[in-house]
Every structure is written in C-alpha cells, then in structure tokens.
Image (cartoon, rainbow, N blue to C red; front, side, top):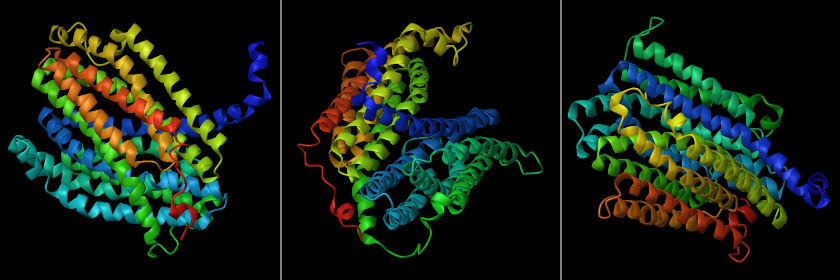
Length: 471
C-alpha cells in the first residue's frame, strides 16, 4: 500500500479530523504561552538596565510571587476540564458553563485574599531565607506594587480557559501578544520616567505589571461581552449567586493540579539551589540549559492544554474512541516536536549557547563546556518533560488529578531531586548528576501518567456527581 493510499484510508479519517482540530486549537495556545514568556523576559531585561542590585531584588521578589501564582493557576485550571465535559455532554450547556466560570472567579477571589497577606510580608520571608536586608527591602517595595496583579491575572486565565474550551483561543493570543507592547511601554514610562511619568524604578515595574494584568483582563472581558458566540453565555450574570456544589468541584479537581504544579516548580528551584552549592559556574550553565528547555516546553504545554479540552469534551460525551484519539493525537505531536528539539540540542549545542554567552570572553571558558554537557542530558529531559505535561493534560480532561499529584510528588522529589542530590554530592558527579536526576524524575512521572492513561477504562474514571447531575 502506498503512503498516499494509506493516509486516505477511511479508517484513518477520524484521526485526521482529530489532528486538524488539535492543531487549530493548540497553535494559538502555544503562541500565547510564548507571548507570556516574552512579557516576563521584558521585565527582566528592563530591570537589568536599572542595575545588578535592582535586578537581583526584582528576581527575588518575582520568584516568591511566581510560586504563589503557579499555585493559583493550577487551581483555576480546573475550570477547563469541567467546562469541556459539560459541553461534551450537552453542546449547549450554557447555564453549566456560566456557573463554572462564575465559581472559578469566586475561587480566584478566595485564594487571592490570603496570598495578598502573604506577599505583603515578603521582606520577612526573604530575611528568614537569609537574604541581604537591603536587597530584601527593595524586593518588598517592588512586591507591594506587583502583588495587586495576582487577582486580575487569575481572572484573565479563567476567561482564557473559557475561550479555549469553546475552541476560540485566537482572541487570547491577540490579547497576549498586545500585552507585550503594553507591558514594555508601561515599564519604559514608570521605571525610567518617560512621557512625564515619575521614575519609580522597581516599583514602576510592579505597577506596570499590574496595569498589564488589568489590560489583559479588560480586553478579554470586552471580547466575551461583545462576541455573539460568547455573549449568549452571560458570564457575569447573577455573579453573586452561590453554587456551592460547583465551587467544591473547582477545589476538588483544582487543588491537586495546584499542588502538582507547585511540586514541579519547587523541584526546579531546589535544583538551582543545589547548583549554587556546587559553584557559580555550574549555576550559570544550569540557568542557560534550563532557559532553552523552558522555551521549547511552551509547545508541549500548548498541546497539553488542547488535550485537556479535547479529552474533556469526549469524556463528557462518554465516547471512548474519541477520548483515545483526543489524548494520543496531541501526545504524538508534542513528543515529535520535543524529539526534533532534542536532536537539535545534541547536534548544535554551541549554536544555542551562543545566544547567551560570548565565546570570545575568557570569563565564559568554564561555563561553555559545562552547558554543552548539560544540553546532552537536556535532550533526553526534553522528551520526558513533554510526555509528562501532555500526559497530565490528558488525565485532567478526565478530571483525574489526585493520583497524578501523588506521582508528581514522588517522581519529582524522590526520583528526581533525590537521585540528583545523590549523584551530585556523594557520587561526585556535580551538576551533571543534578541534571540526570531531573531527567530521571521526569521519566518516572511520564511513565506513570501514560500507564494510568492506558489503564483508564479499568480505573473506572466515570463522571463525578457534579458533572452527572449539575446543580
């Protein structure tokens, strides 16, 4: 059979349809994720213009903020599989979707209040961690402006999930791309005193982030209020009406996601700490390799988000064949992409590292070969990282989040960081051992998640009460 006749086989038609639907949904999500990285990179770049002390203070504060933000993002991500299953069960589930969005926004408010209290005390947190008092004070001044972005950021992500579930993510891409320019302009004005604004330094950067978060939330709010397809959901109608069954559902599905994300984020923070214990050269090489991985990770992350929506719809419709296609299609696409990037990392490491370091500078002589060795491990790391994030996205579509959370805790901290610390210090492999540990942790988690996906029919992953009998 020729290749042309094989791909035109009628039996493959559902897979071709699923592949097209996945690509159409995933590519705007991927580009939106990359746009968010550019927003964060702009902040770092402009903080560097202020000076090394300001950059250090800004980085410290943002790392604290980011840990809380990722927890919140994990929590509100529960809205996507809940809405997807409702629409899969009944294509015009307007009331159910509206209630899910409303209770997710309630969740945003509920989590924000204690987070604001914690972030207001950033200086105490940093001093307890042994940071320089002067730097801690600067970081706290920045945080007292930045922290107000927390609520609008989570609300924006809730509306973004709504658009994704309706398979209209391009509006979020347009808003996310525009946010790059809004953030850069606000930083330029408020940090350096341009266009008649006061030169506020780091505090200006925090205010700019708050302005950008208001812009993204306001823009998507206008979209859902004006677009005909979205307007019929009346998302903000009867906003103060409680729906405690659905509110609990958000927490039941979302809290394990939030903890899973926290386990993953903190293990990478701990890995950086281990690198710092080795030496500054190892930490620099680690930072470069990890940044390269972070950029390519946005692609499987987008496929994971698409998998959650597509699997969730099939799950709500109780269509096992559609569930299988909706899961395996983005998985294959994401792993194929990560395989290509892995080959590139192995074959052209100096080209990639050259984007960060000047090869002619003698000060980089020790960092470059170490970064090259890390990239060889990162190539394998890439494939496992893509597999675990898409595997988690597939299971989230089934609203299966508790057991994956346990996998993440054990895999990242024991199989990953534990193995890395053992190889790095007692066995003397230093930074290379840390990277082998990270790769092994990701391999363990990805294997467990995919095994659970394969066994999903035997695990009796059926619709929970709130999805079978919506209030």
